[in-house]
Length: 556
Image (cartoon, rainbow, N blue to C red; front, top):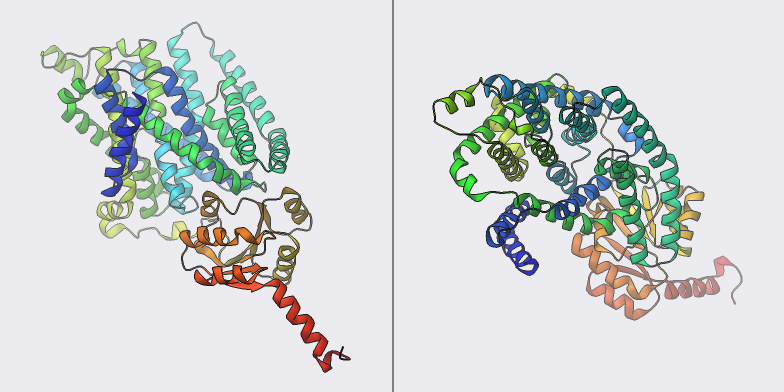
């Protein structure tokens, strides 16, 4: 079954990639086809493994958000996030209770679930397109962070409505104490511990040990958060922020990206495995119609909230980006279904009227599956919305697309290093090059795979980080399109061509200057249009010039 599942996934995604469609759709279709072919459902174990994809994604997002930067996003996280979650919950609660006639508790469950958006899809899209620092990216990220925090009170509410014997006061006190413990463990001590253990792992020069250490940090932080009743992704996000300013940031991102992508793919496969084909076929048009209305209302509400503080353009783009129903709603609906909250219905509303007329017959399983399919189809629609964000925004706003642009002008956007020089290798030559560039006030970034050299560079305030320059994933994290020039000064000149090949594969027209020791290396680099300086030859030339130049002193 595993081989067949892999084959189906690869075949579908190769086809989708060929026609330029998102691979997320392929993963969801793979899950649905596996259920149809083998007659199996989504297991708890598979779901738990698949959820690690979101954990790793949130850790990677945390790496992009230092505490200083998160503090500068107070408006996006606290104001936008709280308004969005509360207002969206109230909107869908009101519709479910008064229009459709669901019970109070079930209406509350639907309202809370529909207030969430997909971290897995949306943040991955903004991260891949390097748009996290944009005005829309900040708003989207801030709201999604608050949604992730909102999971805590949502779980508390579900526990209270599921068990009438629980004490609200005791639960709130326990949650508050747990939050203090989690923050106390993961923030200052966690940052110190993570840096120290990464130092030890990096000094071994064993990549598998370094990767294992990263996994320990991510899963350890997630487990601590989960143990105290919070989401695993929230713990992973805090752990990411804890080491966001460390020398290992870029290397950690490079080493974890493959784990994140594979586990996110598995997550969407598990989503597809929740599809009931017979129910889908018989209720397809009703699902699409209600989903269209739900997403439209969510877009309109988020747009109205943000329009007070942001331009029409950034407000509608943020609203469209967050229009889907998030992956955590699966957990909310499963929890509600397990505790028989779908059994409770009132005798009023549209559904009650249709049922009395004999036009429909609703059972709890139908409500659960209907909501699950709405979530899945909203996720399927999201990649198309994100891909065409500009054109959809223009179509909706038309002449008002540029309304309120002055509101965006005062938003502080973090600037990334641009038009800078990368120094590969922080050895004898690298430190000299860095010193000259620093003296001339030229922006630069030095990279070395030796922790000792990196620490020495940090002590003299050089801009140096730890990283494996031969690794493609690491190179992609450096935003090479913003680099003016790359100077290669490594002592091991035998791997220079391999490094140049990888760099040119990513940015073909970038300027590279390399220090070499032999004429054969010069010829190899000349073939791929890389400038080189033969250190031995240049030093010999300088010695001869000084020895034979009368102006420099007495001839030898």
